[in-house]
Structure formats: structure tokens, C-alpha cells
Image (cartoon, rainbow, N blue to C red; front, top):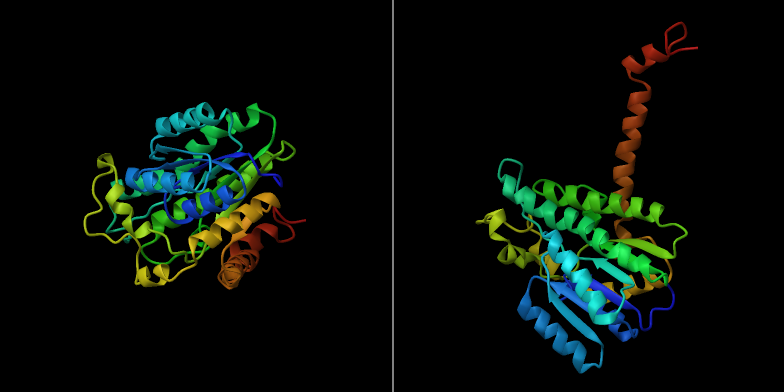
Length: 288
């Protein structure tokens, strides 16, 4: 999607962090914006910022864990601008803790936002992007935790972000030749406000209590991460060049290589396991 000027983008989690970074990059490129977020005050600030720059912008309070709210956001976007070309499934949250520490409601909330929110966004916006026949782009924010293990205390986040990568890979295969491109963003450390996620937790998912948003001593590490505005520019570049996998820290390929090495070791072990050797031995049912 090389020509983006005048195109319409809807961004979840668009009032802060990487979503706001994307909005700034898109706005600077001449795009029209509809920003969705659960934080009404931040939405108002973002709207004021973009209107001050002369960007055509609309906003809507939107909780991506609620399918009907994303359906309403899609209707509002088309109602405001006439059409929509770009969907950024960017909103994300977390609750840190081990399997024994986390409640079912903790799991349900993380999956509802990080995984089902992606599904709801695609289901709501894809038909509307297809409808005008001008092509478009769907970008989903996953994480490096969608490709490698985050360690103890990260199970719901890892599970949901792995799902976001897989969903994007399937969508990419489904949309080949349609003029709608797909990308998945797998950032490393970025200075976002994910640490504040618990304050927007819906009552139906209970309370985070004293559980950390992120497991382990990484809050300071995240605070010193990449500027979200740089991530926004990276996403715009990827969208223009139809780049599928988007990484903010190319050095983290080492972590992925270690994962692949462990998987390869599993294949090597399986190939030499007694059970499979017996099945494939000459003279057996599986052998020649």
C-alpha cells in the first residue's frame, strides 16, 4: 500500500504508546485518522493534538474485548469518513503471574484483549476494507513474546501474542491477491504505558489486585525502551513496502535462533527415539 495520502486508518489503543506513534506517522503522511481507546481523557488530548496539526481525525471510546464496540467503531469510522483502508489492531494488556497465582479472570481478560480483540477487529473491519475495492492494510501488534518464551509469569501474554502472530500469518495467506496487505509487529522493549493497564480492567473480569502488569524486574527496562514515535514510522514504512514481519530490535534474532535450535533438537531426538526407530525398522509395519 504505497500510496497512503488521503487513506483512512483506524487504530486501537490509538491515544498513547505505539498506537499514538502510528497515528502521528500516518497523520504526517496525509492520512485521515479514527482513534479508538478505552481512555477517554487521552483520546481527547490526542484529538486536540491532531486537530492542531490540521489532521482530519475522529475518536471513539472502544474496549476491544467487547465485540459490539469494535463493530460500532467500524460503523463510526465509515460514517465519519465514508470508507476505511487501514486497521491497526494495536491495543494490548497483561497481567503478570505464575499459573498458580493467576485467576481464570486474569487469563480471560488477557485473551479477550490480546487475542479475541484481534479477531473482533478483523471481523469488523475486513468486509468494510474489501467493500470499496481500493485495497488496504491490516496490521496487528504482537510482540517478541509472540515468537519466544517470555519466562516465568508470562503465560497468558505469551499465549495471546503467539496467537496474534498465527492469526496474522493465516490472514496473510487468505488475502493474497486481494490488494489488502498484512503485517504483524513484534516489538521488543518500547516505552509505552502498558504498566497502567490494570486501571482500565472491566469489572466483569474482576480485579488485578496486587499482581504486577509485567512479571519480573522489567519495568525500568521497558521505560527506557524505544520511542513509540519511531515504531509508528517503522509501521508506516512496512505498510508502504508490504512487509509482513516487523521487528523493532533486529538484535533479538538471537533469541529466536535459540528457540529454533531447541525445536531442531526435538526433531533430532524424535528421529532417533526408540519408539519411532522400531516403527520404521525394516520388516515392521512402518518400515520398508
